[in-house]
Structures are given as structure tokens and as C-alpha cells.
Amino acid sequence: MNPLQALNMELSHVCQEIHATWDQLNLVARALAHRTLAERRQIKEMYRAMFGEDFVEHLRRTHMANSKNEMCNALYLWMLEPHERDAVLANDAIERRVTDYKALIEIYTRQKLSQLFFTKHAYLAKFKRHMDQDMISEPSNSYQKLLLALAASQKSHHTDVSQHIAKCDAKRLYEAGHCSTGGTDESLVLEIFSKRGIPQLRLALFSYKQIYGHDYTKALKKDTSGEFEEALRIAIKCVHNPAQYYSRMVNKSIKMGDTDARVLTRVMLGSTDAGMKEVRSAFEKMYGRKMQDAICESLPDGDYRDFILALSNIP
View (cartoon, rainbow, N blue to C red):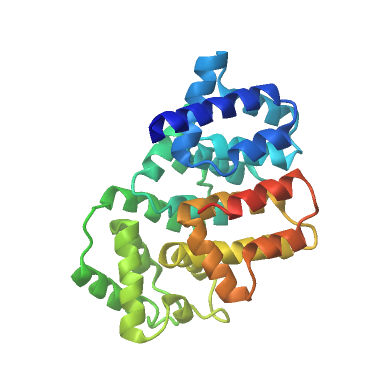
């Protein structure tokens, strides 16, 4: 039996196990948490072929019936395609009483070049509305302006990046932070963000540190910054060093007196996009302990903690 045949047989057994233990969500989660995206896709296809039912739709109905069960929500999101998951997370962020702009910035700065494009299509298909329009309110605020610039930047994505452009943009970012008004030149920053893809922006931020000896976020002084600088700081952290950003978000979400499971689920799933191995390494470097140990100490014993732990151990 070759490796492909062995994998097919293994995943077939997984489908049978899931079907037999459907009412025991902890067992279903245990079977799926460590699976790669390719394996999860294959499991969904096999499950439909074997049992004539859409696995994710079944999960969605279960999630709707158990809306307060974060374990079910996390598993449902995990089994969606990445762009479908982002569409659901974006809608959740927009529909909240106070829009969760941090969640939206995470979505608009994903590492894969085409993901936002597919996320917008998934959002339109699922919610019958345009994502960019849904997040805009009148009057528009600084977060919305930055998100619209990031949305425009997706049209500027190129596989190649330019060191020359990066150095020029780094110098323009420096100038934007030293304008005569004492604040940040918003129009200049928005112009740069709207014309550069995420890889090019990341290179500009690396160039900035090489030229000026510190991260660009250091130039956004907290004592004199406003809403625009706050939004910009989040976006830059997501673009420049996503592993460090997500490790901080994981730490913040588990340190709250009452762990915010919604945020923890979102950032753990986001960590898989940034690279879980890199996030674990950044966490240990910043906090002096393993991320898995911090999760065990902070979350109550149960199925949800086991699922989050399984995600944190993804290679």
C-alpha cells in the first residue's frame, strides 16, 4: 500500500468515526483538530460521498442550536475553507454592537495574496451584501479609511517585490510621521497602503527598521496619537510581524479574568494562517514559557481547552 492509499484509508476511518460519534462533539473535535487543510478538505469530500450529507452544513446547524457553545463554534470555523471562515468572522465583527475593527484588520492583512478576494466573494454569497460596504458607516472613521486602503492594496498585489520601492516608502513613512502638524500625515500613509500589496508593505517596514534603527510603530507615539495612529499600529503589527502579533493576542485573550473565548478562537485560527510554529516560538520568546503551558494554566479543563491545545500543537 502506497502512502496515498494509506492516507485515504485513514481518512475514511476518520469519517466513519465522526459519523458514529456525532453526538459527542469532543470526539469529533479530537479527530479533526490536528488535520491539515488538505486533509480537512478530503474528509469533507469523503463524508459527503459516504453519508450523503454536507459535513460543514451539519456542523453549522449544530452551532446554530448551540450558539453559546464555543467548542462547536470553533470546530465549525475550523472546518470552513479559510476564505469562508474569514467571511463569517468579518460578519460577526461588523454585526457587533461596537464593530470589532481589530478583527477586520486581521482579515484584511492575511498573508495569502488572493485570500481577501475570495473572502469578499464568500461574504457576498453568504450574506447577500458587499463586505467593504457593510463595514462603512457615516461619518467614516480612521479604521474604515485604513481598511478601505488595505482593500485597494489587494488590487496591487504582485508576486515580485521591489527593494527600491520599499526604501522609498520607508522614507515616505518617516516623513509622514514628522509632518508640521505634529501628528501623522494620514493622506500620505493611506496612499502608500492603498498602492502596495501586503508583501511590499512588509518589505517597506523592514527597510524602515534598517534605515532608522527602530520599528515604525515606535514613531507612533502613544501619548500624542489618536484614532488613526491606533488603527495604523494594529495594521502594521499584523503586516510586519504576524507571529508576534498573534502571540500577544493569544496571551491577552487568555489572561483576561474571564477568558474571551470568541477572541481566543479567532486568534488561534489566525495563528494557523501566520504559522503556528512561528507563533509558538514568538510566545515563548516574549513570555518565557510555552504557549501550551499558558493555555493549560489559564483555561478551565474541558473540551474547548483540549481543542485549543490541539490547535496550538499544529506543526
